[in-house]
Length: 326
Ligand code: 13P
Image (cartoon, rainbow, N blue to C red):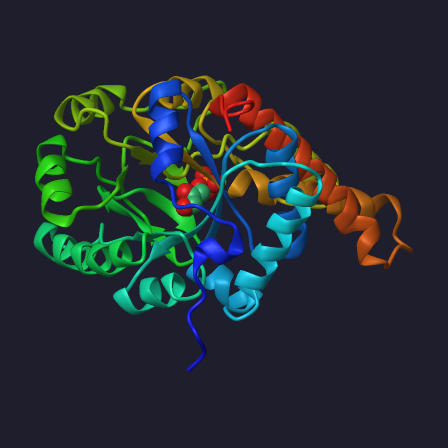
């Protein structure tokens, strides 16, 4: 048994104040997923350079990939790096799609300042029971908890669903009251991964269900809402991947103007993973194709990291509205 690591000792914060400011300021805090050093460096650098609060987001399998013991030390190093450069942005470390009490507790005991417990595939009663169990433990440690109602389609890390169902607004109040969760992920038409919609040529992605979001806002005034599956799937990156030997046909995401509209509402956290993966993959493919003799990882991971920094700065400024809102 190793001693627990407290998030405060890693210079992290929970999401409470971040979401209050996001609600008042009508923007959303970005939650960017990572699993390696270059992604982590890009996220903290991009957010520090745009003076944006940030949620560093890690799925259970990403944590395994990076190594659960190494994870808090990586994050501590990344925070120290931007502090040394003079940045005071608030930074949270969040478990994405936690699927058990044990995993959530393990993360809380190893430096996470926020956890999601995803019981959205369970019955309402089971979801309430599991979420409350995590909230009861998390709150004794000052850690904030995200719950979920409704199911998103798509595949990403350990979450996968072929079908979706929208969040039922009539359930949200009882869920929040019974569990004490600090924020709620909802399903209004976003989905995980790079293939969010099957569109015929010339067809536009369907609109998110803002009517459901508005009804939820009315039932939970001032309560932070979370949007998963919110990558826009840049056509430029998809084209680059295909140009340099990839095969990503019919990849399509959520239009930026719809995310901007959501960010101005009670949506306080927007999750972005696929867009970062696509940006890095596009650049790595380009380097491999143009410089086939290259075998120094810094020569392809470095430019990939730069591309991710640009993407993050652009999102913070033009999509989430979080730039300059630290
Ligand atoms: P994307 O696949 O749209 O990036 O969604 C990420 C996400 O919701 C992580 O939980």
